[in-house]
Length: 106
Image 1 (cartoon, helix red, strand yellow):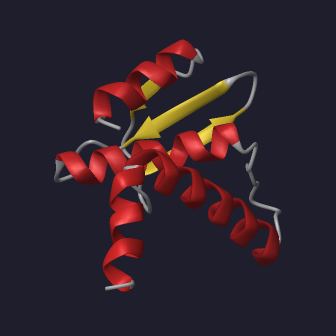
Image 2: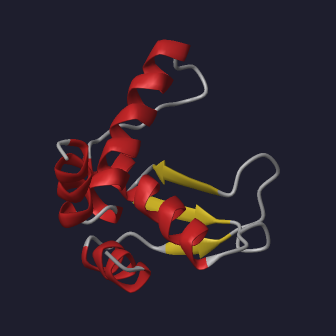
């Protein structure tokens, strides 16, 4: 999936992508009266990095894996795992995954 595809998903789901300067992170999704994705484009250096960050934030949205400042470490880890899982499914083409299995059996 390309960056434009991910941006189209966000648009379809009515999730604004906002350029916002952040101190400790490059991207974050906030779910308060709707969902908003904040990206600090000053810190993002490559197309691939931008694509991966956006995919991960969309993963939080699709798996409803949000957390708050009061969340436990365990809750945060579970939410991050779900978001990374969605990112992997969205960004790694199925044929690439299958090729890994085929090469392993050789």
